[in-house]
Length: 348
Ligand SMILES: C[S@@+](CC[C@H](N)C(=O)[O-])C[C@H]1O[C@@H](n2cnc3c(N)ncnc32)[C@H](O)[C@@H]1O
Image (cartoon, rainbow, N blue to C red; front, side, top):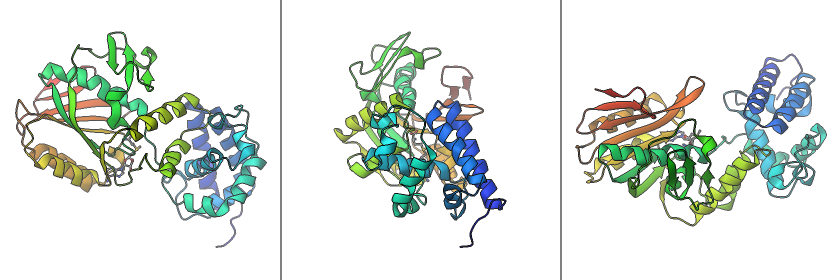
């Protein structure tokens, strides 16, 4: 491959992608990565080795989140104990949180180059346990529809950590959600306003999930992969993920490597006597229009009744945040659509 020199289109694209990621990391609370990415932008602009490495890749730097693939790969090496100079600084490895010297980062990339080359071709895979706030709240709210038992179906479930939401706990002004003794807990600061809390929330009688790129928490490499994509100075998030992995490895929930459309079609094909919930969080944008239509058709065509409705619960981006929408099918039509906290409730 021809050497890339500063001024090349691919170099400026790489530099721009790194700069954007730096802004995102700063906004989302990772100063350590933001500072490192700022250094990498300067290095790329002067034709340095990391910029060259990224610009030589066939992937588009922004679209493929190449910078996060690289940072995740290096973080993983440090978590394995093979980059002591970075571990001494990454709080996730017990480090002091001080800035990462570019030279140290470059040395690790250089020493582990074959692994880095492979990992730059693999997509970022995250499973955000904080999103369990949605199902934790939902099982309370859904009792207002007279629903007490559920068959829970999650698509784009990643490692399936949010399928364990009933084993997590949250405290809000209206009371406790889930298991208050859990090692995965959310304090009241997670809630701007509280969902309705009832004494007997609905219970999941069956839980299943699917993701074509599902990670297996019982596989130590997969668990490490999940942990490595959490930014190393976001220690609370890191510890929560680690606790959730601990809970998931001790449980047994069905998780299949399948695309959303096929999974929903199959799971909704049987005439269940239980109300069924199809849930997804931050997945819709990753689905092709064919897969999206497959999911919509399966939902609209499922056999549903007042006693056993099919409920579509989604938490997906809306403007600068995400919103939660619930659509209830109780016999082929959608009687209601609602933003989660009750705003926008609309009988159809
Ligand atoms: C941003 S992650 C969100 C994961 C998880 N829902 C969460 O909130 O933590 C997006 C997920 O969509 C999955 N995905 C991509 N294509 C898919 C498909 N055709 N069907 C189902 N899931 C898909 C990815 O593998 C990834 O796990």
